[in-house]
Image: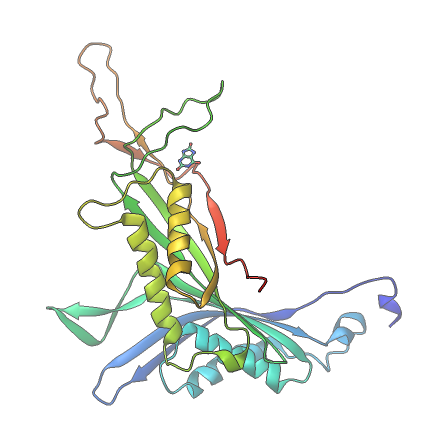
Length: 307
Ligand SMILES: O=c1[nH]c(=O)c2[nH]c(=O)[nH]c2[nH]1
């Protein structure tokens, strides 16, 4: 192809924000429900489409969208977002000779079953806050990478947080403190150690359970025990403890990234021309602000032993 002499083309194509929801009905009248926003991206041998206007090797993105609905219909048992992403990625890589790898991202809407008068409702759901995310990559050989995560987990504690001992210079105004609010919106993503389709766990809803468990470990570590809490010397130290707790607890997770913006609650002091002052801050009245905010993020992974 003359056009490609001296040039390198890297390409992928796919469909974004394919929204689908699925209901599964148990015999006893209990319903299960999921709502997903699916992104598909295919790596495929379709160079002629770019360089010669020849679409004969193109999987139409419209076909990708329809495949989401067709596969949702086929999945007759409730399944995790990860397993649905795997179903799709497997289909694209095995069905089309041209497709060498598929990347499927899903964001699940946080519908939660409601309880009415202490009883779980059979078919009623309300929208929660944080979202379960996943990215699955599958190639033709069956090699696989599953990353899962949480988006929008807003958490705050009103004490047991401080920040001291940082660098001071001519621009430093921030007082040291052992008493402040700590608030953040956690974005987490973690990679599972399963590296092939054949090594995936067979247990149904395995990844859904893991998601719930990881979230619980993150929250327990951030907050500490319910009565006494746990002191945080910085967002950095708490982030590290949270990441370490996840790797320590789940051997099938090889890597975790946490993004934890520091959402500030500023002390309010209103001076007055006369005494007494109108508002003197006593760890009680704050000005909440998310702009500007600190940005703190880190990844923690296992170092593979050379043995
Ligand atoms: O936990 C914190 N980490 C920082 O890096 C930082 N910087 C800052 O101004 N306040 C804080 N708090």
